[in-house]
Every structure is written in structure tokens, then in C-alpha cells.
Length: 226
Length: 250
Image (cartoon, each protein chain N blue to C red):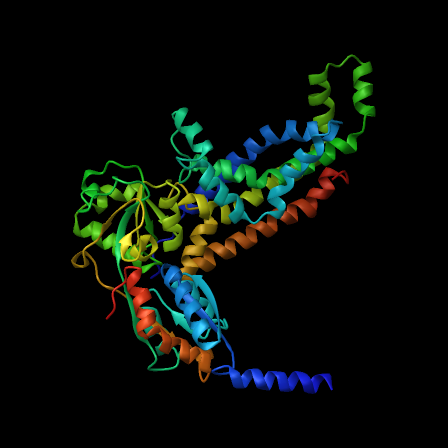
């Protein structure tokens, strides 16, 4: 008999991906709007910084987060002064790490969608006396819907698939930081191939279905905008 | 003409060197990172060979070697894995021997946190204790054994953070993210003493000996450099280095 199946990592991973995706929408939308419309010289540097997680190995991000958020690091000093304690080895720490790590997957599709809008719909709305907030929420966001959906799916799926950052700052605590990818790694290293297959196979199927939804029927429903 | 020159130069070089220079691929348990670096440097100097060291968890090496990794020598963190590999025909039989006996230390990067008797564990005035995953790492298993023997395991368990291997465990403590943790003495010892922070060198009667075995792998069969490396590991020079990092020898 194999040991009882442990659902905690699956539940934790879904929770982490949901919280991270919501946070990314809150942070990423204004950032994407600004990147899409600004003429500031800062556009280049900020855009490059947002894209960094695409090219950096997760170990770089994990290592710097561990040092930066540790008790001696500037981030750690700040969180301690705010009474939050230190973030590594906590769920909040993983949310922060995942948000940084998945940032480009959310910002870039939304930014592209905003850029594709052009000036005309917004100018038309302005002549109808729509204020800036109204223009943003009633015109820009609905027209950029395909970009938002791509961002949500990619942000969520990429967080589910995260490994390096979590391994570096997580500490493998059941129920708090032992996410799916780390649990799979553990099973493989401990030569528990049956459990590893269940989790790894499930993840493969999940990822395929998510991407199928995005590239297959999703594309038709959303039109060809994305 | 050019080729001929090259061949004769290589021939002359071969005559002057003690043996044909060769490369040996060694898989090494993370806790032995520091000593193996020095041993390999000395070995290269003395023999003219080149040592390629790969560091990692012993369990991972097992999976990799089983699936065709090109390692010729394994310096494991335990004696069970080399034995298991021998039974499965992955090694040259009869070549395994204990190259070091690992020592466990409870360590903090800050002075004054860990006392020399380990009473800090009973007092429990800390947030996090780092431990290598006992399922994967012998030093983690030893740390768990110590806490159980002292009767503090249940109290400390909620505060445990698990490193994937002993290097990551050290990193958790070294960066101060965990106030203290169970590491290999070799990671914090220099010339037989604890170099920085505070530590309790855990007495041997609190945990089963961590016998670390080396073995010649099937891929290293008949390779002179690999055989010489294992022999070098038993030399007095190598033993001196190993002891300097706080290991014991059989």
C-alpha cells in the first residue's frame, strides 16, 4: 500500500497561484497602462526590469530575495520595522517571490493589448465627455479583454509551474511553502516514483489543458485580438 | 608536417609527465565541498590529471548515475547508497571504503546564540531551525535523531525549515533567515575550529555515525585517473585535509 495521498501541496499551490494572479492584476495593470502610453525615457529601463524574470534563472531571483529579505537585508529590516517579521519561509514571502517572477507574463500581454488600441477609441470617448477613469474602465479595459485573459492564464499557470524561487526561499514547510513542484522534487529524490508520477502526470495534464484553452477554443471566443 | 610536429610534441610531453594526463569525473556529496576542492587541487598538482567535481545530493547522484551520468567516482554522504549501488551492479565491486566520518554541528551565524552544550534547543527562544530534509540527507536524519534523543523534537518541529541538501541548510543559517540550524561541521570548521558565529559540536552518542563511503563507479572501471584519485583519497596528505575540516577517520 502506498502512503496516503497528500493533497496539501495541490491546495497550497492553487491558493498561491490565485493570490499571486490577483495581486499581479492589481500591480500589473497600471504598470502596463503606463508602459503602453508613456513617452518618458524611463520606459526602456522599466520595461527591461519587468522582463528580467524571463531571462534570469530563478535561482538568481531566489538568492537575492533570500539575502534582501533576510534579517540583515534592507527588505528584511523594513518588514521587521513594520512588525511583519521576516518573509522567507512564509506564504507571504512566496507570494512576493511569485509576483516578481511572473510579472512579465502578466504585464506584457496587457501592455500589448493597450498598445494595440491606439488613440482613436480613447479620443472618441473623450469627445463624448468621458473622464479619464471612465475612458480607462469603459473603453480601454473591455477592448483589451483578450490581453487580460492571456495575462490571467499565463500568470496563474506560470506560478503553478514555479520551482527555483520557491526552493530557495521556501524551506519546504508542509502547508505553508511545500508547493507541488517542490513536493514532486522531494518524491523523485527520495525515489518514491509512484507519488511523483501521480503529481507530475497531473501537472502535465493540467498545464496542457490550460494552454489548450488559451490557444484552442479560447482564441475563438476572444476573437483574433490576442 | 604540421601533424608530425604535433604528435612528437605530444609524445615528449607524455614522457616528461608522470603519466598521461587524464580527466576524472567525480560526484561529491555537498557536505564535502570544501575538502574536495583542496584535495582535487593537490591531486591535480601531484599527478597532472584534471579533476572535474560535481556537487550535489547523494540521492540525486543515485538517480543520475542509474540513468547514465558520466561519473567515474562517487564520494557519497552515507554508506547505504554506495552499498545499494554495488548490489545493483552500478559500481566496481569491492572498491567502496569509508573516506570520512561526518560530524554534526548546531550552528548560528551570530556569536552567543548557540551555547557549547546545546541547551538553546531546550530553551526554544528562536523562530526557525534549519535542517536538511531527513528524507534526503544523512545530516538531516542525524539532526532529527539528536532532537528526538533530547526530547525536544515535537516542540521544535513547527519551527523547522528544510533545506534540500546540507548546502542550502547552511545558506538558510548563513543569511540569518534561520537563527540556527544543523549543519555539517565541515561547513563551519577551519583548521579544526569553528570559524565564525557560535556552534555546538553535537556529541557522537546522540546520533548514529555518518559514515561517508567512496566507490569506483562502473564508468570508472579501468580508468587510471579514477583509480588514482581513490588511492589519493587514502593518502596521509588527503587525510590531513579531511581531518582539518572536522571529520573523523575510521
